[in-house]
Length: 78
Image (cartoon, one colour):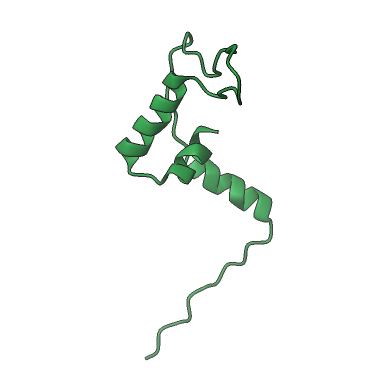
């Protein structure tokens, strides 16, 4: 007796499939409302920082806690 061949499903709507994958991997993290995400403007020469030190520390903590590469961490935080 042979096994029946498994059913194959084809993805037709890739947008909804990708959205479903994002929802499946979503993670809700509560942050303090008073946390400053963007860096304050400084009067120094050169390129100004984009994110505050607290935001950078938060990203690095998430990276270490979940063992993620930096690129995945920045994608998750964005």
